[in-house]
Image (tube, rainbow, N blue to C red; front, side, top):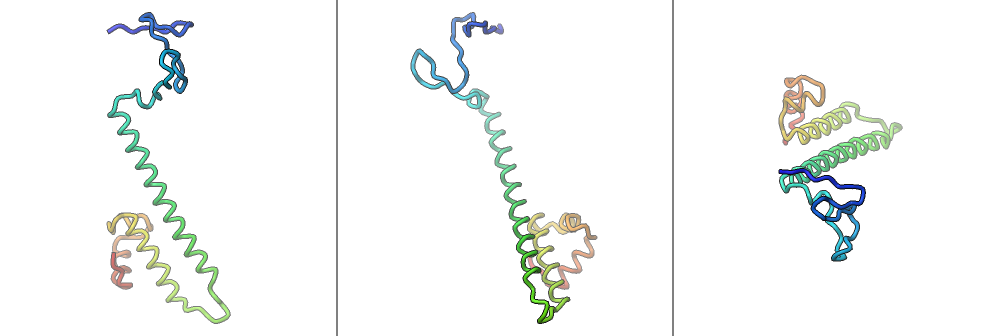
Length: 134
């Protein structure tokens, strides 16, 4: 196999004219294909899978951030003058955090405990105490 160089004129030794992507070729008036489509199909599919994975991770992060923001807004909206049941609020907050961690780890308790930075036995006891189903 022989490598051919493109000279300053933009003409290969084979006589083919090369133009930057996106410009029209003078011969047929059709736009040239993008470089992405010139790659082998396997590389394009892998790149699309990588992009889809990145988008999925970003979506999960945004959903988690939204849940934390909603919890923070709820705590700020509490009416302190009427009194607050501290233990009920702690239970509600812990329950939502545990559910969020279990959703993130697809129910894997050891990973959820690591995410929450607590021991797996502590997480398991809180799941039983609060009767959390996932």
